[in-house]
Amino acid sequence: MEMRTRVLGRLNNFEVEEYLQRNDIIFVPVGPTEMHGRCPLEIEYIGPLGLALAMAEKVDGLVLDGLKYFYNGSCATGKGTVRMSVNDGYQYLKAIAYSLLSQGFKRQIYVTGHGTSELTLGALVGDFFDETKVPLAWMDQITVTNFARTRVGEEVAKQYNYFMDLTYGSYEITGRKEDLIIDPNGKPPEVHDGEMFKPGVTKFHGLPESLQNISHIINFGSFAYSIGFYMGDLLDHGGEQGTFLSVEAREEVCARGLEQLYKVVDAVDVPLFVKQMADQAEYTNTVIKEKFGKTLPKNKISEWV
Image 1 (cartoon, one colour):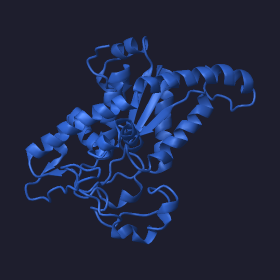
Image 2 (image 1 turned 30 degrees about the horizontal axis):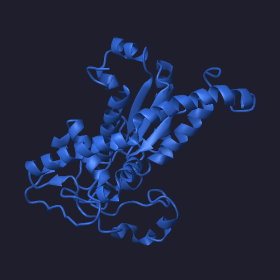
Image 3 (image 1 turned 60 degrees about the vertical axis):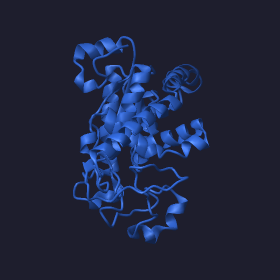
Image 4 (image 1 turned 60 degrees about the horizontal axis):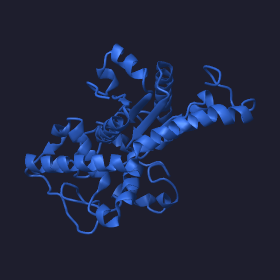
């Protein structure tokens, strides 16, 4: 359905209530504000925001924006980084999830692009389901883009850096591309054939010095939180990405990224995703309720829906 905007905070209350009469889907992009080389501090929030906006269009959903102050882990050494503990972020998101449910949003999809988001979102999804029997869902930008690569074939996939293409596309769709720096004296982006990079993306040269001590340890868990560490240089995270030699170069990369963003969203099959959320809720509140309702954790705010 044609809408003036899909961003919840830009709608008025009458528009939201009208929407909830026909649907119950809301995408919630979540990210940190942290140092990221020469990129804007909110880059790992803008990526999920752009992805959420494009997906909401596919399934007549809304988007709750502005949630960009969460656990940042190793990037706490940057003075632009807004530090937040995992627990504080979890409690904040949980309060929002309860509010959205009471408002009528039974299908909540959280979208992230930050390496440590799993610590917050995994706990939220599990605990909220136990407490309400309403299945929240979350998707990670890296996982989404890797899934999309499997759907287009290796020959096509190797032409693109799907994660950064999608991020630059998100700067286009959100109207934030002017935040990406133009520096005619900056380092030109490197190009290396046969790998997942294109002009506008700087090559990553392996582990920085600050991570050499844990080069073996990170093979056995998640890179982002297999062991506690801090970045030892302001360019260790993000490097030269996000800086362009000219406005024309930035325009080209963002336009190309927007094209890839829509291709990724098509590959995700968002209609199937939200259908399965509804199917899972129905199964939980019929079959599971009948078989195990007396032994499962009791709902905190109501009887089984």
